[in-house]
Image: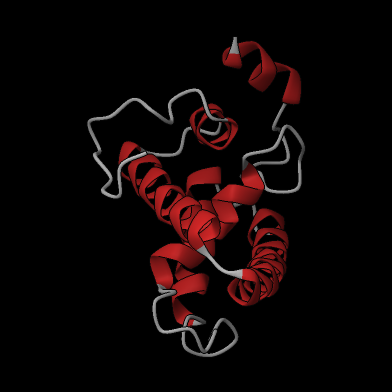
Length: 143
């Protein structure tokens, strides 16, 4: 894997997190941003030492908690999946230096968003953008 992300690359097109975004009609820019964030989170996850892995695991739990709060709030307000996606990412940015502060200088906002997309990269409903997410549809698109 290269250490630089290329938006033109199709490397992530069959990843579960991308398919979840596609089936929820998340816009192209949002999908490209999610792919890039995922890429950067994958790099730091693979290169992290034991201590930093613990920090990343803790950050990922915090990111998941913020996602769940925002998802619950915005789906109850009948926001579209694209709006939920946008609001979740806005919340992560807003909390970057507060709740999501890590103490590790090389971990930035891009990595933190990527930690969410790593969680979304599983065939489950832990991280989705709509209550209507159908895992069978996602599994079919993966083939």
